[in-house]
Amino acid sequence: MIRYNPNNWAHVLLGVFRSPVSKTLAIDVICVGLYSALVVWLERDIARIPRPFGLPVLSLLGIILGLLLVFRTNTAYDRWWEGRKLWGQLVNCSRALGRQLGAMLPADATEARQHYRELLGAFPACLAAHLRAIGPTADQQLNLDDALASESGLEGRARLAQELKTAPHAPNRILSRIAAALHSDINKGLLPAEARMSLISLLSEFDQVAGGCERIRRTPIPYSYSSYIRQFILLFGLAVPFAMAPEYGYGTIIASMFLFFSTMGLELLATEVEEPFGTDANDLPLDEISLRIAGDMEDLVVLPL
Image (cartoon, rainbow, N blue to C red; front, side, top):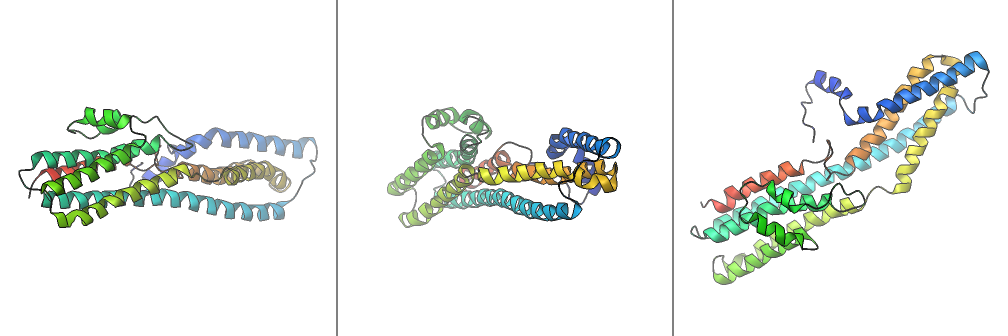
């Protein structure tokens, strides 16, 4: 995720040349400019080209395209923001469960504290690797060794990674191990029996987070909808020079380039943020959040009050 100061206007404006959207569109915008120059040259110096429509029709098409792009960007940002809320919920429920375990476990229950810290600290990194390896646009293969290695000082990391590799759903395996450990410690007397319902209720929030993230990851924007908008933008960009050339001459070149940059740029921006669990520059900082949760578990679970 790109970090920036929204109050530093100069840095934000100069950063437009380094943004992923600008880099992607640079060659396309130049091609549109060359195409517009060809249309204007043919229109003014070679032969009068029949216009399919004029500026009034172009304005109406622009309004329709604008409405589609607004809906497209809003839908994409809703997916990004929902993903961020789910990972914020993961931070909260991890801290809540870790705090309860740290307060309830005996101070000398070092092995139990370390075990819970290991599992709770590994869950976010494991979930991030799982999300990046599923769905129709998987960014990478599931690599639990790298995911768990991001948590420095993880006890039994190699053993846990080896076990999770064989699991059909690694995050579920971690939650199952936490639930089994809770019931076992309650039966042993390490945890009070009356805390069973509250601790299991906190653990169920992890399932809600994982399920919500998988729903976003496995349900992309419908292909027909996304494809239609891109086709509309392309046809709109091709039609602009014909509508503007007779009246604006070679000024059409700059106008066409700007219109294409603004419309296709919004589409690319929506495409970039609609999958928030990847590794692109504007995706959510899942690795950073995972490290933060792992550090919280060290403080809340391992260190006794």
